[in-house]
Image (cartoon, rainbow, N blue to C red; front, side, top):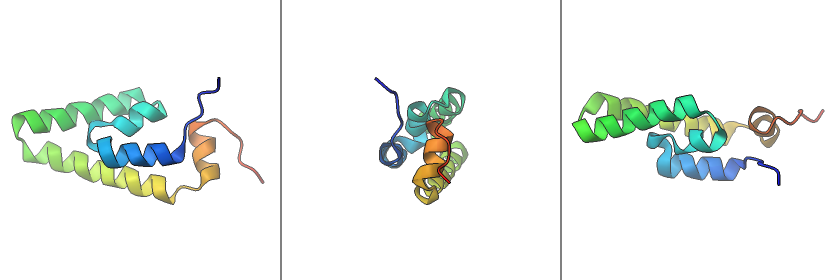
Amino acid sequence: MENKKDKTIAIILTLCLGVYGGHWFYLGDQKRAWWYLGLGLGGLLLCAGLPTIVIWVLAIIDLVKLIQMSDAEFNEKYNGEAKAE
């Protein structure tokens, strides 16, 4: 079975779990996902405003990038497929 990533699932994960790096865990960027999780939970547990604001802004930027990305670009970047000419 092929482990192909789906753009719609990535967008939904960004909406629901973006501040905790859910979309990065799904897309395979473990390092970035752990940073998001650490900042998201750290800001939540410490009631620190700055990490929370930063991670929200980053998640929104990720969401916009995913929405604007074409299916061909998404597949090339996250599924290793060559772009169709």
